[in-house]
Length: 125
Image (tube, rainbow, N blue to C red; front, top):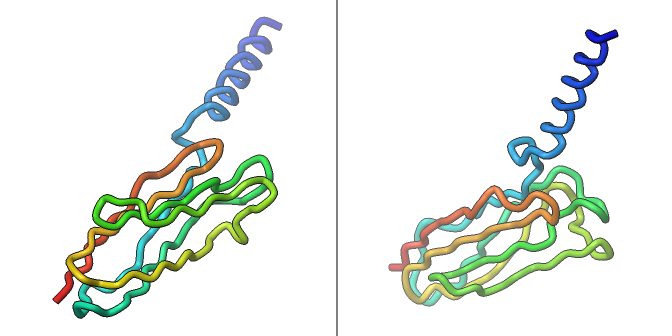
């Protein structure tokens, strides 16, 4: 009987640790795709691939932002009533290349947070 209680206690502890651990959490991640170089005055398209396992009303990507040269240019927001269309989705943004562009993006899960920013640089010639 004592052995069964010990095993049950260890299993309960293990499940609790798994359920509360951020290391196993499903955080939103982003990957930016942009040209490495652009001609001055041209418009470029920046794509952000957003990944989050399952998007439901209780667990979903709730925002994604893009910054250019440190300034937030656009923020997409999602709610339980306006969820992202898929687990992986692409957001597009167009910008005129006047000088070198430092582009960063980040997405956020409403429960587990973010895997962090992605950054790219577009050299303007």
